[in-house]
Image (cartoon, rainbow, N blue to C red; front, side):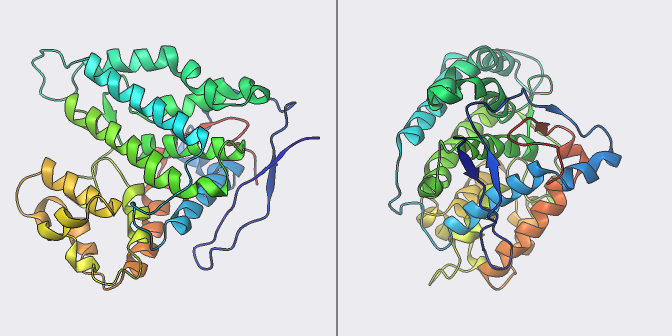
Length: 327
């Protein structure tokens, strides 16, 4: 009998789960993901696709899962979670083994290409142990999203499209039931947090360029999801309000608990000058009275500035698990 993998798809308003299911049987024909959005005219295909429905549903499910919870909360750590953390530890160790090279350019150290090539060569063998034997044929499809989730080898840059590829990697594993609803907290608080640590290491060691950065008018040079999920964590917090996050003492005391504040800490570490000048959009968010309004606003912003932007989605890859076919 074919297994079924359901993608919960909470709505922005009520968080109810969509009961649609996707077939993921051993007879399922996996395929290596490829580009489908070649021009702005193709964006309608993306917006009506199964991939769009399932990806957004997955992001919003995680948003619901972390609502009001500290990152230090107890969470279920499954064997696949441990294995995935091990993969991220391996990627981290490869940075130490691939130091930056001497070069005249300040940004985009070419040693990143050496690091990336090692990942390209080994990514399928890294991912395969995550999969039960009946899904070993899924490794070439799933591994592509991990490879795409760490930046671009040619441009030596990283941005929200690469972040989305890593979230798509997690979504594929969820569709295959490698992860279940019990793993939701660990996926954000352990796995995605570890992924962020590795990405920040890559960004700083290899001086990666922001991909498609909007400068001071963007939310952040590199990330979006930790702000989205991090604002959900802070819903109904008894003392920390949006107006507090630009304050250094608040960030210093609580950054290990809340992803939003950890993001602010990293920005403060990487940028100089008044916060209102180098992070104009975030400064504006600090004027929003409630975290609920911040969270709903960031969901709308993510849809508009990431999921509905051709320069980002043209690089999204579609296979059998995240399909371009209409929902």
